[in-house]
Image (tube, rainbow, N blue to C red):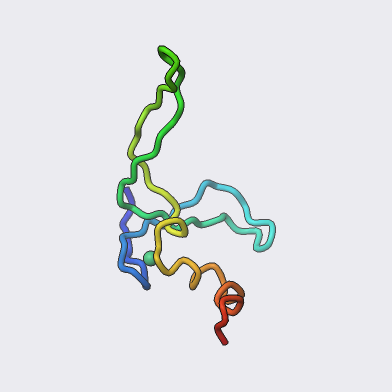
Length: 85
Ligand SMILES: [Zn+2]
């Protein structure tokens, strides 16, 4: 795995990675800041005796979903809408 860097706001370890998708805005690969800590996610794999059966895996998730200061990174419009300057 590549080297991680701490989030400038909360200090969580981040891995900057790409899916290979090209941004239509910039024409460059989309870079996603991943929270490098492992998070449990669940996938439905079937049913058994009337219950949904899931599989649990550990995965990285977008840091936009885990950062307590995500609004700061997603643009000042949200902050302004909350009553900021
Ligand atoms: Zn953060």
